[in-house]
Image (cartoon, rainbow over all chains, first blue to last red):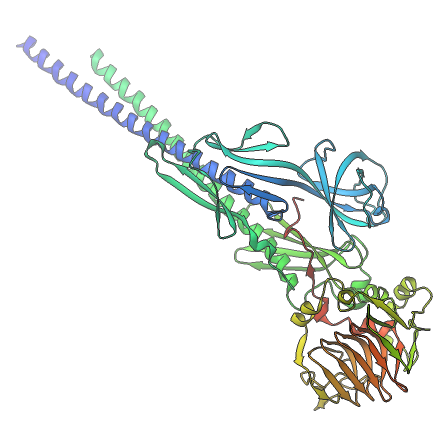
Length: 237
Length: 352
């Protein structure tokens, strides 16, 4: 009696235990699968967010066709603006400028150029030869921190403003958005989550957009985002 | 007994693993929500900053006028404005870069995101600088003829006394004296046609778009008053020069005439732009006249101010132009021409 009962109890206990364990592992596997899916979606969202924010910001400060040119579908070449400097009025006419600078990084003469706004409202380009800290002060605002910039050429007329830029290009390649400064390598800015091709830059009625496509893993994702366009050039009287 | 314990332990461990993964999922979802919200706030702040800048292009908005604008030092800001749009707050100010170049700066703030900034360089007409850039009392287009049988006096352009120097000239006197130190201008001079008909970047088309426009007509300008109030809507009410205490004494007309203009008698003051020919008979006008065709002054017509005529001019015997930088500058105080003009180039400067 005792032996038979013990065997039945053991079998039932084993079946119940295995069932519970199996259900637990099945639940764990499902949760893990959902987590992987969400993580992948999160990476895609991050890539979308980064590419949208970075590219819109870069193109926003330039003039289409002048400061940036799109080579659809794979790249954009551009002047990547990195800051603005006010030129001290008393020294606005020579190759040496006393400037109050603010931007995203320090000027680097080896790779940077400037666009100068003249008193007549025209833009001229020059290379930046050197940047020196100085203890001088600008009479227009003695509290402002200033530095001395030397240009490659003397502007033909006094200048009031300088925009610092580096040459670069953005590429949609290797499953990600990448930035290439000058002749350097292409550095990825986003996770490598997209299909390239067919992802890339597209033109829509004079505007430039970025189209991200992912067909892997059954995602079937397609996102089209506006980046910049020709409306910038509309005349204002 | 040991087997039952093992199952329990396994289940507990698995449940702990599930809880850990679920916690990760929760954090991930929360992060995505916060990131999306931050992106929304940043976008709202940027749009608010850009809206702040764009409001400066509306009529009658700019860094003040007259002496207040003239006295703003370089690199200093004027015209501070704040407001709210949608769920964001914005601020705007206008910083002087040179006499006529300014930088409109806008800031926007929404939610917890860092303030966004937008700025744009603009040209704003400076009456004193514009007047000082005019090389003669009567400037006509290259290749056109200026027949002067009457008189053109450029000997005391900063202090003309016919009639008495108006009181609004006083704040400009120092600036005019420094920009035209001799106080004289040649009676006539020539410039390229395009330059004669422009005020800096404002060409004839820009002026037509900004100013009150009328088709060419013949009439007599005279002050129009009704119930002690100046009727400024009347096309032929060009103000009441020399009588500042009258209702129209401080009304300066800013009129664009599309076609030819002919006047017979009357008086007026302000800015007169004529796309065709202008023929003034026995008319007194104080201010600035710009003519796309040919200007004819007949009878005892008198212009106190400055004149630009692309197609040449005919100043007949008895007519005169008395150079006055003050009256010309006063004519350019019109809000129509003082609105900011975007500089060609990028829509937004940055990053800053």
